[in-house]
Amino acid sequence: MTVPPTAREYDAALIESSLDDPEAFAALFDRYSGMLYRYVSRRLGPEAAEDVVGETFLAAFSKRHRYDLAQRDARPWLFGIATKLVARHHRTEAARYRALRRSPVDGSVEGPADRVAAGVTASASRPALAEALSGLARGDLDVLLLVAWGDLAYEEVARALGIPVGTVRSRLNRARRKVRAALGDTDPTREEA
Image (cartoon, rainbow, N blue to C red; front, side):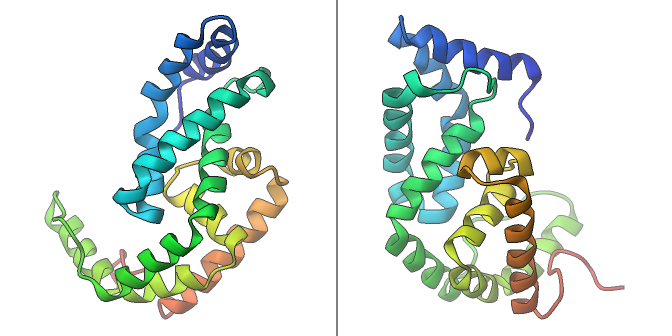
């Protein structure tokens, strides 16, 4: 999901205006808290997600005076803070992947018949996927999940983690290879011809 250019410009302006009017920072929470909650919830579970998202915005608010106003879009900055906080909850995340290996898919898939079939096939691969994710190096996992669940572009992941774009590409490639190998070199969401 790409934020429209006017919103990106507005993020930097909101942060700048929040230096004089702290209430202005609430608009960033309104804009991005749902996105961050979905990302963190997938990594740590809904129990911890609310706390981590709250911590993310508290940290962002306290560091807003150091925000680079040339970066109009605050999303990578916020996802970077959230990812660092998720790393502190590493044991919770590892336990979540272990639980996912053992549990059925929660919730139903809505949509056309082909989406339902793809979801059923993908759910059969869930234990192997959880195993693969739990075996990835922290940096590779962060990059993979920021792209897949955070819906960030490579450049945004680089900003979020403070690493070069080339490192994002190599970590993502390595993570995808390991996950693909764990799934038997197949994509469970695509039908075999």
